[in-house]
Image (cartoon, rainbow, N blue to C red; front, side, top):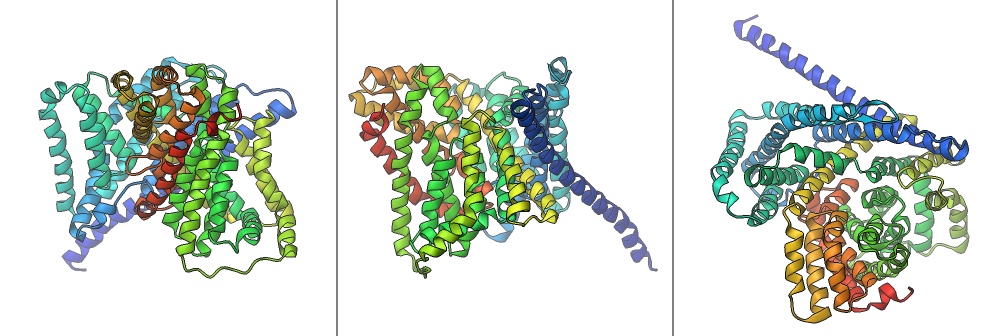
Length: 620
C-alpha cells in the first residue's frame, strides 16, 4: 500500500465512525420521538377512562402530558431539521443561478446557527431558573420540563454544524462571514436604533422578517432572528424572555391536539377509513367539477372548533382527501392553498377559542358570539365555492360518469363507520366526555379498532414511520408557533396597540370609515400576531369605539375575526399559510401562485359580512 493510500485509509476511519454515530443518533431520535407520541396518546386516553368511565380522575395526567409535550415539540424540531422539513420560502432563491442558490442554502444554515447560538445560554439560564418551581401533582422540578429547550437547542446546533462541515469550505466561510457582518452592522447601529423608538418595529418585524423570509431562511428562524434583534439592539429586555415566550407559545394545552390529529389523519389513511369515505364522497359528488374541493370546504366547516386549533383541524382533513384529489388531477400547491383558505373561512365557527377570548375581554355574551359565528363562515365558504366552481369550469379534465343510486347507497353503508368518526369526536367534546385536547385520542382508538375489526386493514410495519412523520411535522409546526408567539409579545409589549387605537379614534367618516380601517388593521395584525393576543390587546380598546359609532359588537367581532384570518393565512408573513404547507407536505413556493384567488374569495366574503350586519346578528 502506497503512502497516499495509507493516508486515505486512515482519514476514512473517522469519517466512517462519524457516519455510524450520525445514523445511530438519527435512529435514537426517531425512536424517542415516536415513543413520545405514543406516550401522549396513552396518557390522555387513560385520563379519559379514569375520569369518565371510573369516575376517578388522574390529577397527574395533564402535567405529565404537558411535560412530555415540550420534549416532543423540541425533539421534533431537531428531527425536522435532520429531515430538512422546516418550512421556508425559496421562490426568489430558486430563481437565482445555481452557485448563488448554494450560497443562500448555506446562509440559511449560518443564520439558524447564529440564532441558536444566541439563545442557548439564555435557554440554560431559563431551565435553571425553573428548578425552583415544582409540578404539583408529580412533585418534581419544572426544570425537567424546561430542560427540553437547552438540550434540543444544543442538538439543533450540532445538527446544523455537521451539515455546514459537510459543505464546501469557502462557500461555508462566506455564508458565516455574511451573517457575522450583518450582526456587526446592527451592533454598530445600536445607538441609532435606540433613537427610533417604535420605528424599530418596522426595521425588525417588517424589514428583517421580509429579508430573511425571502432569502430562504426557515420561517421559524426568520421570526426568531427578528425578535432577537429587536430585543438585543433596541431594548434592555433579557434574551431569556424570548426563550420563555417560545416555551409558552409551544406549550399551550390546545396545541397538544396537533400531533394527535396529525397521527389520526395518517391512521385514517392506513386503516382504509379514508379510502371508503372518499369513495362514498366521490360517488356522491365525483361527477361534479371540483366536487372534492367542495367536500374539503364543507369538511373543514364541520370539524372546525373540535380541537380549538386550526392546525389540528387541517391535519384531520388533509390526509383524508388529498390523495384522492391528486389522483383526480389536482395539484398539491392548489390543494394546500385551498386548505389554508378554509382555515381562514372557519375562524368564526364555534366552539372557537378566539370567540371565547372576545367574550372574556369585552363582556360580550359568548352564546351570542357562538350564534353569530355560524352564518359568516357559510358566506365565506360560498365565496370559496364560487372560486372552485369557476376554476373547475376552466379545467379540461375528464370527469367520471354519475354513480348509480345503488353504488352510492352501497358505498355509504360501507363508509358509515368511517363517516361516524367526526360526529363521534364532536359528540365527545359537546357531551363532556373529553376535552378538545383529549378528543383526538378517542378518534385514534376508534380508528385502530375500526381498522382491525371492521375494515381489516392495519399494517403494523407502517406505525413507526407514521409516528416519526408525526413528530417531525409537529416540531416544524410548533417551532413556527413558538417563534411567532415571541414575536407577538415583542410587538405588543412596545405599546403599539394603544397608539393604533388612538389613531383610529380620531379618524373621520363614522361607522363606514371605522369598519374599513379596522379591517385593514386586523388583516395586518393577523399576519404577524396570533388572534388571541390581538384580541387581548386591542379588544378592550376598539370594541367600545365600535359600539360608540353604531356598530353591533357581535358584528364587529365577526369582521375582526375574519380579517385576522385573512392575515393569518396570507403569505409571505401569515403563519397559518406555512402551517398548511407543512400539513400538506408542500413547498410554500408551490402554493404561492394559487393562494391569491382564494384570498380574493376570502376578502369578498369579508366585505359582504362587513356590509351586511344581519349575517352576524340576524339570529340573535
